[in-house]
Image (tube, rainbow, N blue to C red; front, side, top):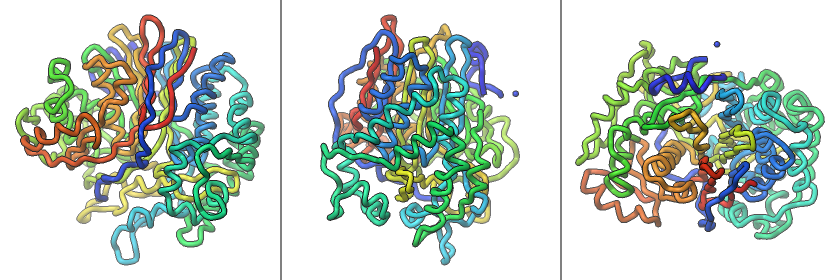
Length: 579
């Protein structure tokens, strides 16, 4: 979908029209410490991503005259090598794109799809109960039809400047010549158990004794180089209809303990969807993001819409702000659980969920002195009479890329293979496959009432990914933001926006600021941070507080009169750089 920003600015928290699992308290990706970062400052362009080698690939492409999309493609291809646990060609992504010349915003959905053989009982055991999470994850059962390769190709057709083949060069050099294993990759491999059972992954990531390659070890991936060359020469068709696809099908269907039912037709029939962007006002700004099947933009805008009724600038960072933020999160997540799903299967009342009057009515439920506890879903306007049961769902890890090029075009892309190291299946082509189908609700109904996010053939699982682009009061590009983190993404992105827009933090300080919020369960505070002492004040207001790891990977770029400022989350290894 492509919209003119003038239309978005004319709408008050509205959609721009186009022609029960337990909540996880485990971090999507384990924490491996922080890497101190400094604010990135540039005058011409900027790219922010989760690994310096990937970020440098993006800068190389920008220096060669590439567009924001060109740079994002190069970054994604390198992330497949240096951050394989989070994203890659075996997964999916959402992209929000701003065209400065045309002043138009577009959103592309490269979300994975359930194979035709998938049934609502895909994750139900023989005992009639939902499978355990890891029992469902590991193997071919959890693998959705990947969308990332077609998304990259489609975006390049629309907004690329450099030849498609040029974008593969940075990743090809690293695959052929090798790159050094980073502390984060080494640490995560050391914590991982199931990956050792995949013979291809074991041979690639571990030594003969089953120990992860040490930090600094030069890791080469010649089979992935072959995959890259096939895509470089044949485009996405080489993946979906060629030898790469055959290898994917073989890996999924021949898994020794948990095979899946993906077919060559599933791959061949995959399509990228252009979706309706969701844009809404927040104070003097317009916040735009990805609509369903992502719940990210809707939930972020609901949280911000409720906080807009509060003077967050005056309140400032502290327990009072955390209370308000958590209560808004409870209300937003209650709506998300009931109403959000794939719009091809579920009538999602997007217009009603972000209606300014409705959000204001939800804000009135927030008591400054007492927690709601467990919030109930509201009754937004414009909803249909469809009745579904709520689903919290379990969602896990991803990566995020933010780019602005010399012409002011911007990309916010969140990309994923779902859990850390996905389904723990590595193809002969040298990349990991997703376990995205576990983003569906495992139980197809609750008390006889169907769940909106149930498994169905050809359906895209609900997501929390929230790639976001922000415009100022004059319709000018102001910020490009997004984060990994499963369902925590919503709170990570909303926190970062409040920190930048209300608390006037620079983007590095904003992304590094402690994470917190509620997903309509306990109030969660990032342990070991300056927010931890706020626990007592929250408990005095009736909050059940949990101190947990909250391993975000937020990448934020802010436009300034002098150029750009960028922040790369210190919880990961990336940087924000440019010229």
